[in-house]
Image 1 (tube, rainbow, N blue to C red):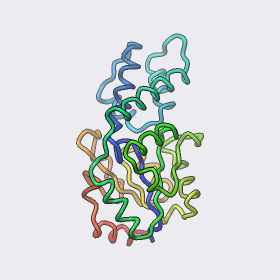
Image 2: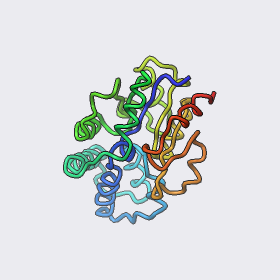
Image 3: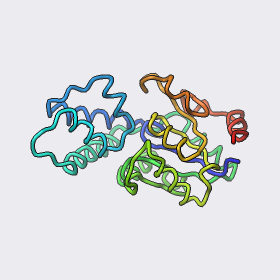
Image 4: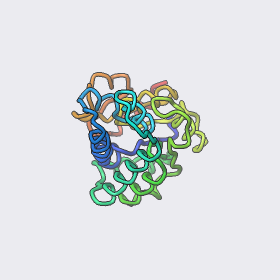
Length: 221
């Protein structure tokens, strides 16, 4: 039985995924790395540390400083969220739907706490979540299940009783690996959509989620 719902953040609740990509492209193109559609698909949803290490393996550069690059990207994304961040369709409605059902609600994001709080405050929804958990606390990022397992611990709910909403394939895999039910929100620019078939349910938007979907998911074991 579903007792709690966990949401990813970037690209699911707020339109910030392009901000990460813009910051990523700016940083690594300046280092002479060609960013192809295939590379975009591979890096979509990866934690920033792993994304930086991925590019460094492709084309190592002098004076490598992971933290310096990471915080430059964080700063650029945070500024873009403040200036351009908007709520994606269906966010308020789906949160209220689960609140009426008395389910616990949380955030489990790969982003650092600073960016999570900036994004939630921009949308004015920080107070709607029972817990907020960042992948910064974990040794391994998505697709490792740690961020979801520990978010469930914070909620005091067994992972098998959690429902997750994700928009990246690595996030879907992380939640499935944690033995949670997963709804993939799949847009046309998310790469190979067929790969998202591993999720329990695929939708184009949070706004498409209905009572029938919840009832169906609640029958899954």
